Structure formats: structure tokens, C-alpha cells
Amino acid sequence: MVDAVFWGTMIPLVFLIILLKGENRLMMLFFAWGMVAFAASVGVNDLLRARGAILPADLSVTWAPIIEEFFKALPLLYFLIRKQKTDYALFSFALAAGIGFSIQENYTYLLSQAAVASSLTFYVILRSITTCLMHGMATGLLGFGLTLIKEFRVLTLPLLFGLFSLSVILHALFNLYIASSVRLIGMLMPLMLYMVSVLVIYRGNILSDTVQAEASEG
Amino acid sequence: MNASGAAQSHPLQICRWLLLLTLAWALLFGGLALLRLLSLDTLIAAADIYQLALGFALTAALLASLKTSRNRSAVLVTSLAIVSWTLGQLFWFSYTLLMKSPLPYPSVGDLGFTGSYFLLIGVLGLLKKPQNQAKESTAAFALLLLPLLLAVFGQSSPGVRLYNFVLSLAASFTLYKALSLRREPKNRWLLAGILALAASDAVFMTSVVLLRASRTATSAPLYPLALALIAYGILKREEKTDG
Image (cartoon, rainbow over all chains, first blue to last red; front, side):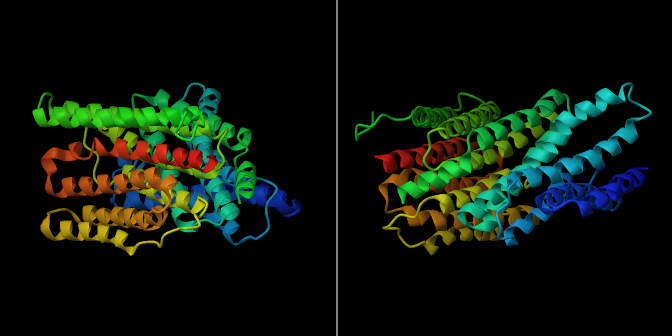
């Protein structure tokens, strides 16, 4: 069933992507990649489970965040070789991959809960403002880091790894809380992170102001 | 007002007070631990809560300074480095509390601690290079001897040995980049913070392998000092640049 939903979403998306041009196409490609990343992550997580390498209960706070963040962030490496600047912030492309991932994950949980949950609409809205945002924001962090790397030509790998670690730890913390008695903290975490990021990145206008300040200093 | 007569920004003042408070806390912690006035478990729990509160307070102060900062990216990435360390600590703290079992070492939580070094390397790359910059010092890599010695003289699992090496490598490389700032007085607080962080991790690694009974008590008062110095240092250098 999950496979059917995947193909049922992906094939129409491919038709749309073919018709789109420039950065709109790129944005949709990142979104579609998020869905592919979900399928790949499920495959690797299942493999770990099947081999008995890790208990299913432990997976969500051990390997799963590392595997999922890795797959979601993979296409962002494209921006390291791309020379032209983008009109959309790199943060948005990363967010698109994260959101694509989480929508596909929503379908999976929705199908598994169909027989159990009393109100699927409430369930899926709740997931959308918690888990979906968390996936988007965790990958968005890496997109923001790439902007810094391209703008200031700082050492690429350390900063990328630092931000990757940060996105993994956020994801693992979310998984830990959401499956525990303090679920509410887990639910509020992505929303708070989203609001802080919007304030810092967009309202704070970080990059342009820094460039101006440094230019005037030099 | 500072020595040059310029008014200090609120976030800088907050970081200075937090640094002084942390120094007082470290002395109190040391005194209570030596005099055994409280059990080690109680002290460690109090230290965990202090570390978390301080980490988030320092992050908030740095984010608040972005509005007026002249080098916003460096300050922002410093706040990410501090929050990365704090989230690592939060994962550790939450896991032991919610799962009612100790968190294995190394774990996903340790990514937060290692990640903070990589983010600090990013910060050092974002800072404007001083004209009288000293050469990067390979002496920083002497820190790599520690995991080797611990592997030879201590008993630990391959996972612990590998992670100790990775953490030492991250700390050494950060020090290697940071030591080039040593000639400029405005960078000294930041450099002191990075040195204190590396020293705290050296104490922590040694404690994990050799002094298991003391657990995290040996490094508990040191980490907050390092974080407070880093946060104060990044804002202080900016004030001195302005002056």
C-alpha cells in the first residue's frame, strides 16, 4: 500500500517537474527527492532491524536519525558544485527535501493508523505541525550552512558535519520525547524551532547584513 | 562602560555575568565535592541542570546580539556550536531520565559534543583574518596522544576508543585553527574558551576510561566555564573591533 502511495504521488510529480523550468523545477526535484529519501531510509532501517543489529525500540534514538538526515541532505551537495547563485534561499531547497520526506512518512503512518485512530484528520494535522516541521527544519539547517559556506568560502566539511550533527541530535531528541511521557515537549519543539529560525534568518537578514558589515570593515 | 569608554551591549553584559556566575558555580561545585557535603549523584544532577540552563541562556544572549552585531554569521554559528553542545547534554539528561537507564557511550548525544567543535571551526573560518596572525600550531595535535595513551593504559571497548580518538581529532583541529588567533588581544577570551573546552574533554575522556567511579563529576564544572568563555569571547572581540 505504501509503495502504491509512493508511485501514485511520484509519477504525477515527474510530469509536473518536466514542465517546470529553472529554480521552480529544482525546488520540485528537491521535494521529490525527499520522498525518495524516505523510501531509502525505510529500506536501510528495515535492513538494520532484520539483521538484529539493533532493537526496534532503540532504532528511533540511535541510527534512524543519522540515516534519515543523511538521505534527506544528500542532494544539497549539488550546491557545492553549482556556481550560480539561486533566487530562492538554499534553506528553502533543504526545507523542500525535508517536507517531501515527511509527507511520504505521513502517508505511511496514516495507513498504519487507519484502523486504530478515531479521528484521522486530527491525527494527520498534529503530525503535520510537529513531525513534518521537524523533518523540514532539521534539513533546513544544513541548507543554511551551505549558504554560509558559499558566501564566505569557509572550510566546507567541518561546518557541514557540525550542522549535520546538529540536525541529527534535534531529530533524535524529537524521537525520544515523542515516544515518551513528555510527548508535549516533542510536539512543541519543531514549532519553536521554526519560529526562531524564521526570526533569525528572515527577519534578522543575516547574510546580507554580514556582508555589508565586513565590507565596510575591510 | 568598558575601559575605552564605550558602553557594553546588553548581551555582552549578560554573558559577562553568566561567566562570573559560572565561575562561582564551579568553585561551589568543587568545594561541595571535596567536602562531600552532598552526594555525588545530587551534585551531578545539579550540574546537569546548570549546564542546560546556561547553554540555553548563552544561546539566547548570542541570538539577541544578532540585531546589532557586525559579524552576524560568526555570532550565529557560535550560538549553534553552544546549542549543539547543550542539545547533546539534553539528550544525555533526557535519555537517562525517561528511559531509566544510562545512555551508552558513545551515543547519538555525543554527536552534539563533537559537532560543536566542527561548528567552532566554521566560526574561526568566518572571522576576519588578523593582519598579525600567528602561524597555525601543529602542537595542537599533541592532544591526539591522549586517546592513544588511554587505549594503552586503560580498559575500554573499541567503540569508546574510536570515539575518544574522533573527539580528540575534532578538538585538536579546532585548536590548530584557533591558536593562530593568539597574538591578537581581542581574540584571547574566545581562544581561552576553546582551550577550556578541549581541556574539559581531555578530563572527561580520562575520567570515562580511568576514573569510572567519578563519572562526569570531574568535568561537570569545566564545561559551563568553557561555553561561557566562548560566548563572552565572541562578543568581546566584536566590542574591541568596534573600539
